[in-house]
Image 1 (tube, rainbow, N blue to C red):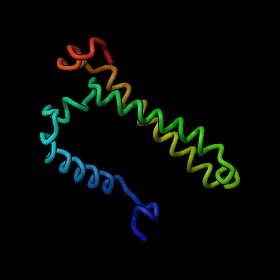
Image 2 (cartoon, rainbow, N blue to C red):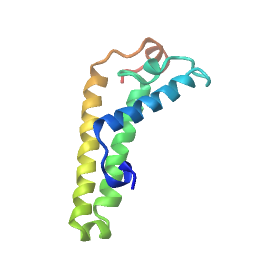
Image 3 (cartoon, rainbow, N blue to C red):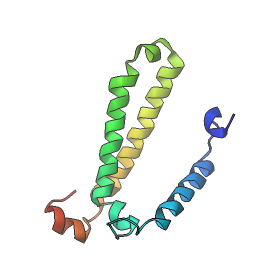
Length: 118
């Protein structure tokens, strides 16, 4: 069984995976129509960062609506606990990113395009 399947992930495993995905994303960074850096497109204060916050919130709500109250999950204390742990972890990530995102200045390109703050 792989570390992913066994639940044996450690933070260094996550970081190796993140860095590999980041390297692949950077290699393709300027292939699309948007030639700004990843930092400009997705860093704190950007629309991309706001979008990640929104998606995180949607996933937490989806888990609440479709999974936490699902009969199979309610029948099993372990599954229910894991669903609640996953929600808490996602909400923690959401809160951390929101703090940094809302404290950051809006990037110049986006303030001109959208006419609004975060």
